[in-house]
Structures are given as structure tokens and as C-alpha cells.
Length: 166
Image (cartoon, rainbow, N blue to C red):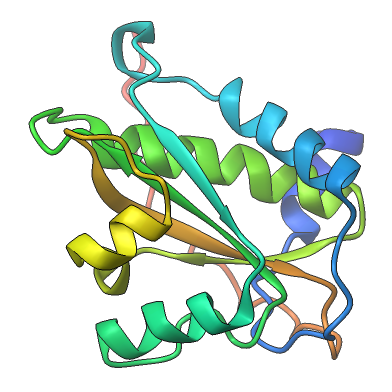
């Protein structure tokens, strides 16, 4: 397999589910958000909105509203909202958060993708998150410094590809 620094970075990124209380800096967060904004979006519309949450009480409230604690006590989370009628919105959110997570890993910041932002969908919480009218939470990512080394990756399947050659 051919490799380079980017591929090595992608292969070494892991989801982290235990965080130190230390916050990342505003400058670091702004860099992560810039990376997220440069992710692909359907037809280039950029129909996504980022809510950055560093308030532990609000993170807990979102978890309780969703019936769990999805942020693993991370000191920060980014919740991406999209218009529900945008049939590609979930994809736009996922692409944005993947860019953010890769950028974070390059800066030695840990993350965990949260594929459901169900706890953030109450009108009261959406208001606290500053979500614009016509948008709703689609996905989120926990952000911080890991409290432990992530586990080694599980072996990857190699029977999941079929080449159609011309």
C-alpha cells in the first residue's frame, strides 16, 4: 500500500470516549471550525450550522433529553444542524464533522463522532444552541483531550471491495 503523512493521519485517528477536563483553546476551536466549513456540501450550498458548546450543564442537559450521556464528559462538543428538507443534510453534517475530526487529530486533540443529536432537538435546547429557524440538529462530535490511550483498531475487512475495470 502506498502511504504518506495524510494517509498515516487518517489511519491513526481513533474515537475517544474518556476526556480530561482541560478545554481546547478558542484558536484551536476556530481552526477546527474552519476545517469543518471546507468540507464538501451538496451542490455547494453549505446548508449547515455549527453550535459550539463548552457549558458542561448544557452538555448534560442535552444528554438527559436524549436519554443518555453521549459526550463522554468531553469539555466541548460541536453540534451540526441542517434543514430537515435537505435530503443530503445528514451527509453534509457527517462530512463537516469528519473534516473537523481529522483536523483535531492533526492537532493532538481527541474526538468522538455522535451520529445522533436527538437530545438537542427540543425547542428549548435548540434555542440555547442558537439554531436558526428551519434547521435542526443532525449530528455532533465530542472534543477534548483524551484521558487514556484509545484502543488499537480492530482488523479491517478486506472482502468489502469489488473492482469494476474498463
